[in-house]
Length: 470
Image 1 (cartoon, rainbow, N blue to C red):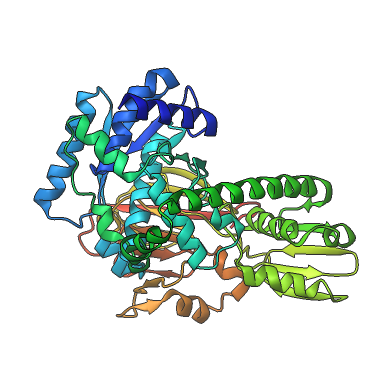
Image 2: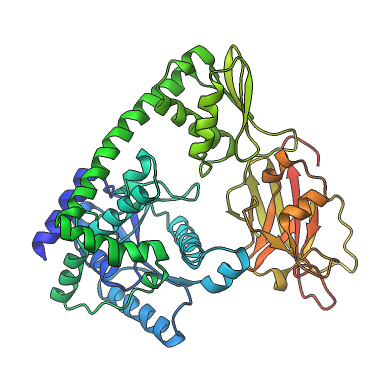
């Protein structure tokens, strides 16, 4: 146990997984990996100068009794270690069905939303996960099978950015530790891990990879996991070099505007294709938000048109890359604004600032007859809408029940019927309740969120475009 703690301490310091003095929120399911994570990091907290808290999330995929037992096991361990404990829950099955997400994706989105809220509440700089070397090897191999680019070959990083836009860092201090070692550590510490419910969510490909493909390959190379992790380290070194080159090129060449990023064509064409791809991705994130990205097909399309005098390439999020004799210019949509809105919780009551929008929310008595002053104002039934209310841009598979229609409809069809230009649809704010879309701002209200006879309270929302009187 002492030797393993020393290895983790060296790894954390060498790789910068955790930063001395920061608050760290440990995500603990109760399984052996997260159990070992809790025991090891809490034992190193004083030496690392960390403030540690523990978070547990119930995806409602197990029986109520099993879920309660999981939570109590983690709570008791946190209390025994003298650490703050928070818990949350979400219905992964319901979200999967409602948003047409895989069960794994739905559970992950719910869990990360909870962790982000709690980290923000306690001003934690990092959410700490119990991923091991086995998880990293699996991830590298998964990206090999999917034909990922160089970035994907890195697999899991010791410390990385929040995957959904703004948020705390993700820290993984156990990436040098094997799954067998976390199990042995728990046994020697006298800890009986619970069954990790997230293991039930493994997608079919990863399940087969874990239980069939990798065991077979280990028969050919018993040190396969080491080889995959070395591949990840080599990719990380190459990516760091490319990122440095891209940063230098961005500073030297990029001209940024509110709705455009431009590069002089001669300078842009003089860069390597790998650096050009990174500049394109950075321009897209600058215009569409930190979680936005492009696929290889878009990079290849831009490379293709660089051989022409003038051309244009359609990009995601309503963006376009235009090549002229003088410059390469990535631009957004029209005045309606196609900049994507990352999922943001509304302050109710209060004011929330979004890209291109300011939102005022208040809780009021239901008016006898709601009369919105503009199409950017609405009253929602407070009880029916529930909380939290969030605002985001559209996602694939979004559906709603438009008030007065008497049935469900694809959001895409709602926007087409409203004659919203294609390049502006990513910028239409969606007010979402826990059960789905409550209001397509400026267009349609969902029948489930509408005021009805006997409503006890209303949430009045007023959206205003920044820089306009609307």
